[in-house]
Length: 172
Image (cartoon, rainbow, N blue to C red; front, top):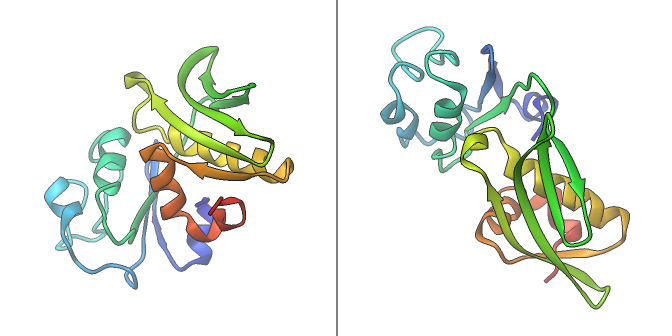
């Protein structure tokens, strides 16, 4: 979700230099993955209870990704935007001309796309590159009036996390 979508959904924003953390008390079931992940970042006995800059943005994002209720979300701040290019059989993410990851797909008889692999290179982990490739590909599918069958585990998980946003292009 975008920052505005999170705020509209009632999330509270905790700003950091490279990452903004968003929290919804209504969704939180107090599982504690955040506090277990880093008491320096997430400490309910402190105000504010979230210090987004207490660890690297990658580490904060990794911890937030373990939140099972999605009460915690994040938006990474980019110095140089990641560029997404959709080629004939793959989606490529680059930054400053360097390839960060790719997602491969096949066109099934011009009826729907099958996403069969999503990979992000180690140097780009935690930057939201995989999510950005899926988002761009969903927009591509919408533009071309196609459905998407996400077979790769990452893409499938993104479709499940964003079911409402992606339902219109999900191939059943």
